Image 1: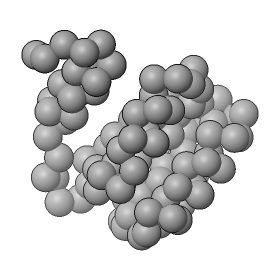
Image 2 (image 1 turned 45 degrees about the horizontal axis):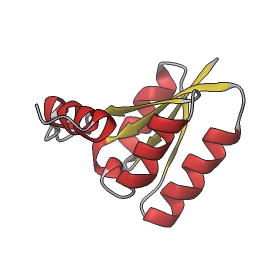
Image 3 (image 1 turned 60 degrees about the vertical axis):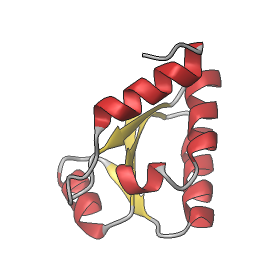
Length: 102
């Protein structure tokens, strides 16, 4: 299984490429949606890494993939500015998944 990175900046994409992870750089919600659809249709991709800023563009689509699809696993990665609060994202995901407020 392969990793695939969808990022909003070239720095992240280059860093991932140096680690052997293919990816793409997108800037609009349409570009992001198309890149995510393409990654989800590729049977070889098992993990999609998405930068924090892009996760905010189509949250409902991402949560649908996380909840209903076995593959690929969608994971948020912090962007270069480091403004991501992963614990809040995980809490929100659990709340939406099982309906419990933590």
